[in-house]
Length: 514
Image (tube, helix red, strand yellow):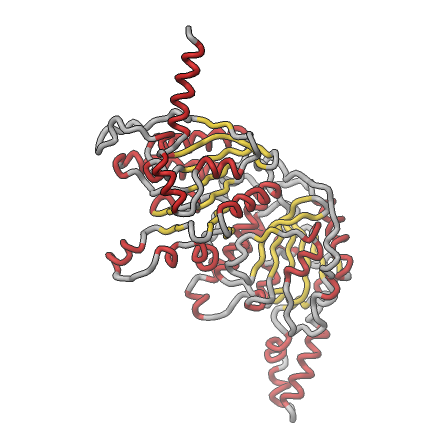
């Protein structure tokens, strides 16, 4: 046996496959301002950590000109590697090979690497850059998509799944990213839609550009399909590298702790809110005054801005933060905010990440549009998600906590382990103005000076009911704390409940109001 000859033959075969679709196709990819699949993998993973699998897989199709046609790696690269020393599984569709189109061989490689990720308990990262189903393979391509969707669902809540959209993603191709935990889009590159502009124009006569229909801005600000928007491909990979550090490898582990650090001194929690309850503030300032190093990775930052979700650390431990944002719609819960919060809550619960909730909510957003959009059903998702979550749940009531909004934002009644309130908290069925108009309606109407009486009754209601003390007297608030002590109190309670026993009632699964 001539080993040198065998090795030479191997290197020759491998080199052809490693070149993807060839120089001309690579040049076209570069001309679009995009990296190649292999460049992406190299940029994302730790140096020299990538081990490729199934390099020599070939398509088996014989019709429509595919017979005898070689497609390097069948248009997708798969393998394992590391990100910040954390093992991950990865696939990267190669647009230089038949437009990255998905056929049976292509799909089988992806399913195989997903299976590896499940068995080894490591995160899965998908770099999506595909023209969609390979038409020449017909129903075989559709079967490939179905197999991938099945695995996405099977892996949901078992290992973190992260998708990056690095080109067109249309039709059936969008559903796999939609089934994953995080979707990252890139400005001027990402395109996501079920039907493209040409089909829309043909069917219903509407004209719209590809960018307006499914570009990065649309998906991150309007539809909420994307969780992060990146300036360029390198920025997208930086987001993944940060995200991986906040997550565990699988649902049987907890995120790896890091050495704790104090918040940055420029974030002073005592100066965030005004003594006038009508003056708004930025809830991010409270969050950053409490988290380690004041570092906070927002999730879906540009969609449903009236609710904040994201990851940070408290005393070195990863936590998921949910907070009303008074800067937008006064921090109310509406259809989109409810969807955003509930999905994030369930993700944290799936991966053993404690939840920290900051409350300043006047209630659910009223209006005909919201009612017709199903705010009852969507709002119930938050109730369901918090009630279902069995991780450590800590809640801090900052100011307003009115009506159903008070209950929904991880109140004691939904299983919060610890509820603290600042002295500025107002816990009541509704705001003082509205409540006074109802409770003291007759007295106001019968008085000689209704407006003056109304003001006095509003003040009376505020003093009697719009405070945290009645709730605390009933045990619904565990502690009323000074703002400057918030971080220390939360660290103590997190330490107590971090490893709490998570009981669960046996059932296949609940029926969430989706």
